[in-house]
Length: 326
Ligand code: XMP
Image (cartoon, rainbow, N blue to C red; front, side, top):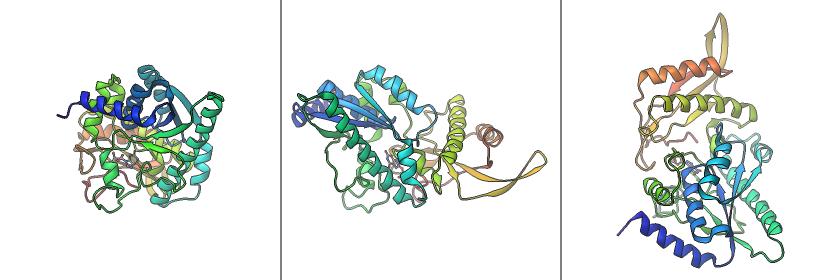
């Protein structure tokens, strides 16, 4: 019978058998999946695991601080934070194609892990066991949508499946590969992770890099971070966090439209709100948000975020749209 208790027991035993006395590293994205995967592996192999949080500069406001504080407090794992913003932004400079962005981000992630691996080995000293495994929070829908399932076409290269480079040097541990999101949350609960982590809405590994339609720059990221923080704050204030699956906030950086503010003409960018309801992200419907909430978000974003003079709502289901714009 399927119970979260059994899933945890089985995975813990399997991971112990697979890893032996070797070491593993796990990338934390700040999301539920990697957090639960890490907590599960930590349960199995304790401090043979080191978590690596790559701050790629594509995170939302406050995200890094949350990982550093909440996750470590809940699990006691060893955490290494790598500031890689400059590296990622350099690699992404001039790139506008969504698949290319995803592949670059996936590749840079692995490069940073490899670097972290070397550092962890060096820190472990001569007696340390090699770091041979990489833990990933890949879920069943990620596997299917990246073409790893039963003959499904490649829709998007999720950074943790299709985006891996060919010269990958790690063996993978993917304890959530057969699970859907709701099951992962239950496993997280079983492992004693706090609500704020377990009930977090999904956020993609490539982060805000795939929520800027156009080239990704520091300036645009800062702008999108502000808009996103406002949308999240207002949705939370309205008590809608549980009702919606997630609400990507997207900057159409290559689009401009004419507006008027005060008595001046503006020529700014639109922000797209993409609130969706879903069971497992394989399909989704657009959320019918209350008008008052939309109004509040729109007013605040256009007043508070420079260069944004328009807020639009995406009313497309999945299919035909995907949840993220890229
Ligand atoms: P799409 O856009 O394919 O998104 O409808 C489905 C769900 O997956 C999330 N997503 C990702 N998650 N790495 C992740 O960890 C990725 O590369 C990635 N791309 C999309 C998306 O936010 C939604 O929840």
